[in-house]
Amino acid sequence: MEDSGVHFDAIVIGAGIMGSCTAYQTSKRGLKTLLLDQFDFLHHRGSSHGESRTLRTTYPEDYYSSMVLQSLQLWKEAEEEIGFRVYFKSPQFDMGPSDNKSLNSVIDSCKKNSVSHRVLNAHQVFDEMSGRIEIPEDWIGVSTEFGGVIKPTKAVSMYQTLAHKHGCVLRDNKQVVDIKKDDLRGGILVCTSNGERFWGDKCVVTVGAWMKKLIQNVTGIVLPIQPLETQVCYWKIKDGFEDEFHITGGFPTFASYGEPYIYGTPSFEFPGLIKIPVHGGRQCDPDKRTWEIAPVVLESLRNWIKGRFRDRVDSTRPILTQSCLYSMTPDEDFVIDFLGGEFGKNVVVAGGFSGHGFKMGPVVGRILADLVLYGEAKGVDLKHFEIGRFDGNPKGNVKEFEDQVTLSDHLIAPSCKID
Image (cartoon, rainbow, N blue to C red; front, side):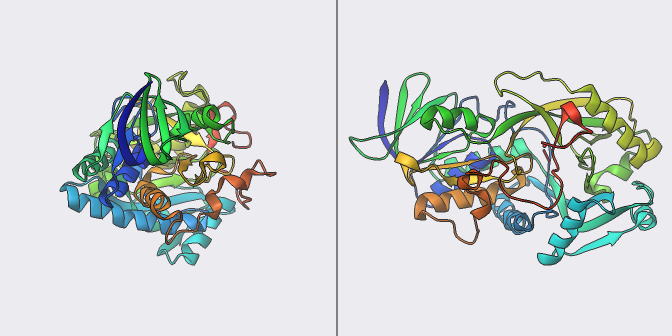
């Protein structure tokens, strides 16, 4: 094996949004940082590419809202440093049956976190949305001001550029196959498939859908992180209605609770198209994907679009689809923890972002940099994200509401579960 001989304070494996934000944070704080990715930078094979992600503070779990608000501030600070925008504000609108436990937990979470919100009945929704969204009589809507669209590929590029500005070394097409203790010099050795070895004091693993494979290969530990293949769908807005659904016209990012959970963003990245996918997918090996959308998913989307948008959006078929990967945990909560064992606190893992983590990339990057520098995170309670929560309890954190993400093989059955 070829040893580079160069010493790094921190080596970050995986250059999606989480790894790029981490590399920015560590390099900005003066750590000599190396950022590696197994593919080309800004590739489309993982979870951090494409044209839009939703930003929202409306969560059934009350511990995510504050993380989103912290991230929002960090997004803005990075935009100021780079000189261009990646986040575009809009309202957020959640809807669903009035007895849906998840949606009611969203309302409770808004109250607990002092997130300004309004609960609307079907008639109020029709008036509020000027007829652009219609919901059944037994549904409710929840309107909040903190929504918006993040441009993911542009955002990842922004953080990589800023990391490089602060001295980070970036290397792509470096597939990491092993992580070892360096018993001779101390620290960690990161080994790639082409025989290179990189030496550092600390290592952060943010490899998304490849997390389970890599950690099992390194330690034998099987993390409960299941890759899902999902398809993002864009639908044509009918002639004459394009402006009504555009972000500049005040149309919100949105989520619809129930079976299936459907989400979307206002028309923005592609003129005349609106993004409306199912929040779910099929289990997969990240290296062996179908790149296809399941027919049952299309049918559920067609029915939902007809019910909510009537004749304003063509529900015949999506005009454009894009493949993406989720990294699911059983409880849909993140995994952010030290790997432990022989590595102690020298290796940090961050994964299982379960289709809703992108918006929180900046705060996750800050947390991971804290763990590298101080051995603990500042201002955030990580108890919900510990690996140990699965010990003796394979389902992880106990929740009183339904899952949001659905397996496409059984959209009508109990859930397993990108916004």
